[in-house]
Image (cartoon, rainbow, N blue to C red; front, side, top):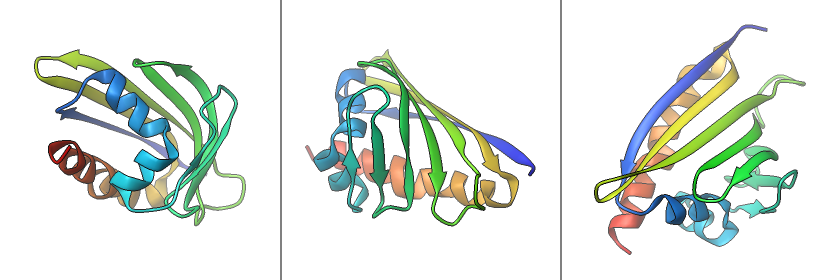
Length: 131
């Protein structure tokens, strides 16, 4: 199966530690995405977000710095699994979040890339602005 890598960077008005925590808190994750989330916040722990659409497990967790996860979407072909890396870096007035999503099935890559913007980055900016 052909795969693609998606790279996106967004600047957010919060500290790297705060943004990191939002991604790993079931309650906060659900609040900014609008979909239910169940997240075990330990290395090797499993997660299910967006009402079960995306699932996986944590490979690496470096508080305030890095989250690496296996990641798969419910509508992907059987056996398809990707690797998601989120890095959080301080910048003036906030955090630069760099996302590298590798191993995304090529037929789904454009929709997943758009989904990161529509369902994560834009709502997250709005959520942080209103806090």
